Every structure is written in C-alpha cells, then in structure tokens.
Image (cartoon, rainbow, N blue to C red; front, top):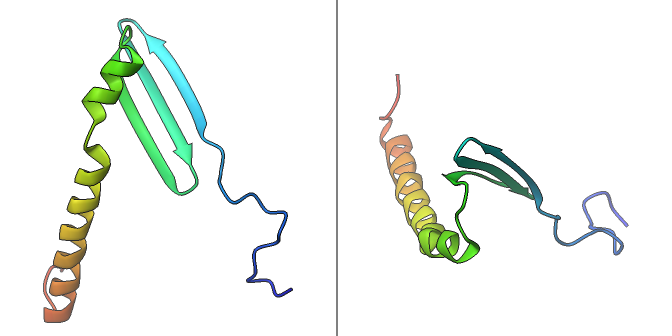
Length: 84
C-alpha cells in the first residue's frame, strides 16, 4: 500500500467536535468536523427546531457565495487584476 492510499481501517468520517458555552443570555458554540468549522451565537434558550429553521438554506448560500467568489478570483487571476 502506498502512502497516498487510505488504509482500510481509517475512519471515513471525522467525528464532530462541539464546544458550547453559555454566557449571560447567549449561547456560543463552535463545531468542527473534518475541514469544516462553524461558529454560532444564539439566544441561550433557543430550541433545536428554532435553530434548524434559522439555519435552513445556509449550506446552499455558502456554496453559491463560494462559487461566485471562486469565479471572481479565477477571472481576476486570468486578467492580472485583483491585487497589489
């Protein structure tokens, strides 16, 4: 097996690492899973359903924004713009 191959015993998914603090009337949370990190601030008493409803569509919005900025960066790189 080469160094670049994934061993059969390797975990295919990283576990989510969750850190939650309640400070006054606010909940501060960080979540890390693999290469993805999320920082969240919300009211301390927010329910899971409220949080889910609030965050509905966020992954899609992040994807669209990343695609737009990625395209802009590539365009600027090709034309020599966007920098110093």
